[in-house]
Image (cartoon, rainbow, N blue to C red; front, side, top):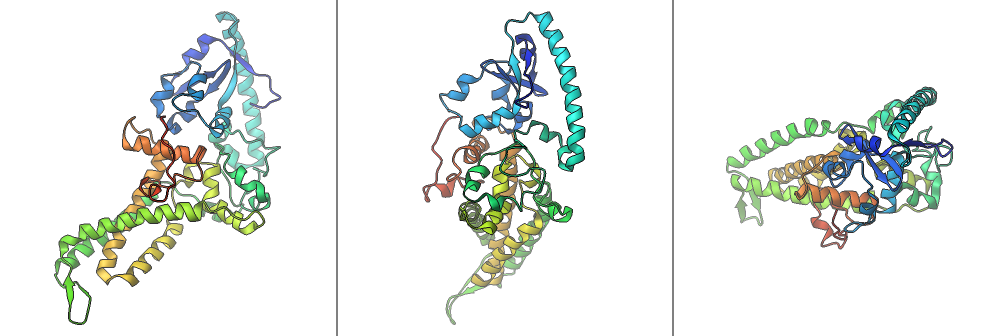
Length: 381
């Protein structure tokens, strides 16, 4: 809601009626928020918000057990829809609400039509809950962001870690823009057949009993077919370490404030994900970009280990990558059961986005955060 627009007023009865997955409202004091679009994103799951629908959640935001961060509070503002009018009687409130709803609908339609003419990206309903101030933000959201962020300099780091619920357009060129997006299901569609084929190929090759690892000219060790699961899991474990290192040292590098190109590179690699963490088209790696990392991983293993042994480790790592990307998508859009491993992992990852951007680099597992001392403090959600 624009600051210049007069707030809408709702009666208590009207607020309490919005208590379903299709329409969920909550209160912060006398302020009314429509959090329907946030239900699936909430790290605590849908049920936690639904159990408090129509009620004042000020106490829950302040804690205990968990005091929500400033980013979380800023995120909440995009769902603000009006004020609670406790003095209005039901009939008056309902009539007023009806009139305001009609006026609001008309204004929304007019604004949508105007914005659509200016920017094709505004057609997405997702944008209706954006909290971006188009007039005062550090970048012009009506234009591609890739070429703008490098000019932010020392302001970039703070800006990129203030998340918004709005899709990002990186490039004006349609082909370049499309190459940075992909739907989650393309990851298993592209890579799982390769994982299955290579796993079968490695196992059948080892089953021939001809694969040996030479240590000296006179001594070598036979690699039995039943070592394949061990080699496979070794590759998977190795990927979890690579995942941690890439996320921490590449994706979360702090580019020099004076270097336009490094800032732009950081934004393209990972900064755009922190700025818009719920942009569903950029939560997994496009297969074309991922193939570069996959190819490098294969080349290194192929040069370090005997052919079929290196391939067995490689296919385990490739499977680990697929699982990592699927888990990452689920952590943003899934609703795991409270108390489950995925529930705690989702809470951990959301805290990384909103409060602890310099820690919590493990995604599919928090294992490597422990030896590298980057564990996010354990707080109850």
